[in-house]
Image 1 (tube, rainbow, N blue to C red):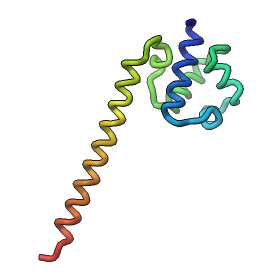
Image 2 (image 1 turned 45 degrees about the vertical axis):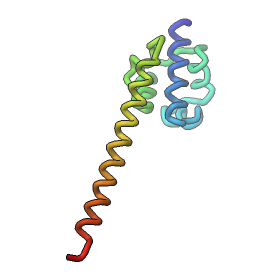
Image 3 (image 1 turned 60 degrees about the vertical axis):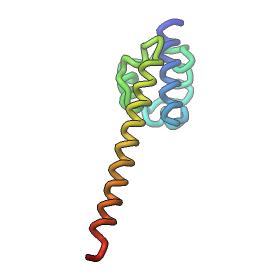
Image 4 (image 1 turned 30 degrees about the vertical axis):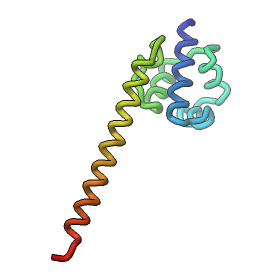
Length: 106
């Protein structure tokens, strides 16, 4: 697969992982859906400026678009998200416990 194909495949993966439609992402980065579709299919290549916008919008480093095997990188992203969610749940549970302890009559 050529560099346009790798870029497009990874772009599509990260977009879908974030549950964004082509319409949503294209609107966020100010391009047409047709142009985004062509990039994802490896027909055209994104400009450097557009790569910056896509990476920022998808919250990934630009180099992730160019890895031919992103499986390890994908796993790290998922682990980071899971860790963040666990921390939020623990913080929420701790706050609920504190409320319960401090709101009881003495």
